[in-house]
Image 1: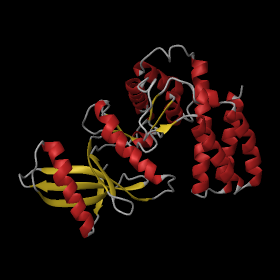
Image 2 (image 1 turned 60 degrees about the vertical axis):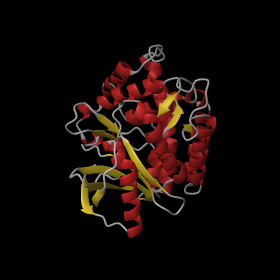
Image 3 (image 1 turned 120 degrees about the horizontal axis):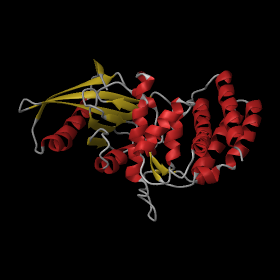
Image 4 (image 1 turned 90 degrees about the vertical axis):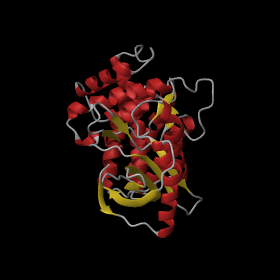
Amino acid sequence: MSATATAALAPADATALRACLDQQVVPRLLGRRCPVLHIDRQASSTATSYESYVVSAELADGRKLRLFLKDYGSSRRPRRHPTARRERELWVYRELLPRAGLGTARHLGAVWEQEGGPHWLLLELVEGPVVRDLELEHWTRPLAWLGRLHGRFMGAWDGAEPPPFLERHDERFFRGKADSALAALAGRNHRLARRMAVVRDRYERLLPTLTAGPRTLVHGAFLPANVIAAAGEGDRLCVVDWELAGVGSPFYDLAFFCDGFEPPALRRMLAAYRGEAEGDWLARLDEQELVRRIDCFRLHRVMALLELAIDKDYPPEGLQRLVSHGERLSALVDD
């Protein structure tokens, strides 16, 4: 999360940010109030979809604070259900992650106005490269981290309702994603839509596998681009972007991260996950069944990517590749 050019604040926004620092951030960090003398905000060079900033604050006692600000007011990419996504991420950072002990960025405060006002999430600034930019040898560490995440929350909501802000990975969720993707494709390319309808029928038969237990907290977009290797902090990994967090199968996150990998690299990744995952649910699955379960969720990811591709107006050859990939995966996992 590094910074680039200074980004000016409108007077009303500057007032809101100062109030957040005075009333939320500084007391959380210092355990007491301390006046903020000066605030500087610079655009973050690591922003992905939403605009993000590095905020620097000078306090009356001479301390200087640096923190990360995520601005949900504008997105560089199309975003479905933006209100639900930002509410979900705020709640995950504020309510779930603090007690998990997983190295995620600390929640420091928020400016959360009504519709039309700013929605800013303020977090601990964690600096370092994202795993996507590291050599492949570093890609097993996030899988070990993922095993710990799933272990922390495994069975947390068995017999109880999960928090209302989390996605529910039930039949309605998976079926809705496929229906939305197919409807969007039909509006763009009838020939590809006919091919995808066959994949959709096979996907429907996989719903019992996609919704089977065990249930845990699922990140929802567990990708190498969303994992920061914290600089100068040993083995700390900081996983970001929790807008799609949900309650569902651990294979969901495994499939997103491992998509495209084959043995022996895939075997190393799964071994790292097995080494940290808790419970006997994983031990009951041999490697062949484990890979099949992951492939089922890889097919779901094709549905999600296809919907996104339509939103982003992918060219016909891009849609063709996604449909062909869906056909290959559906043939692999179809019972």
